[in-house]
Image (cartoon, rainbow, N blue to C red):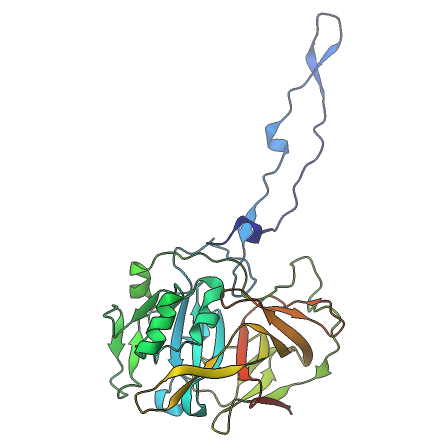
Length: 343
């Protein structure tokens, strides 16, 4: 659950001094008796919980459900992608063969149709961990399951008999798995959310208050994961959107901010069913990052002390760098093979 420290004061306390007014009766010594203080004069301060995934107020309070992290196919074979427009945050990660998968985070909205669902990876430990995310996947290799289970992350998978999975009759396995998150939510228990996923700009700070920003103009970009996969982006209507994505028409995730994190990639220690080595992105430590917001991109340094802690950023001068509240897409790119081209 969100700790009290993550509650934000959204209205100032109306602590006006209570005036002592004279009353019609007099005291025995002829002085006037002060009126009793009016309890209604002190206005209660409303507290609104803030989403750890968007930095925005949760108008209906903290959801009863945990954060769900759904693994989604990210190739044409699994198109169209469903439910991305309802996600709070989305992350793209490298898998075997130079391909990528999406990890879509759902907290404030729980859709009845998300997919197409694919298997988990050990990289997901550092992806889901910071917010106690519970992973929803079609399955996974034994090596991946063992590591994820040891990390303490809850997994709902079709292979393990979790309810809510169905087949898309227009597709074929393994690209046809859909999940009804409402069904999953009925079985899920809340998990502890240690803090925000990203360092959000405080509500009382000016918009785009990224400290010491020295950004360049940018309205389009290509993010390269490998020879096989690049994601192209454009700024339209103030939102960063994929131009080569696989979402259902007009149902893609629209990001207020797009963040590229360059991270170390190693060997996960197991192979996929075809015998290919599986990469593992180590989502902890520090490295370079690029933050796209509005028509600007800033180059910063990211830090993530451990797999289950959130991200922080520093500007070139060492000062803290924050992310304006809103929807964020994170590109978790290999630091050696990955690149970004501005267009």
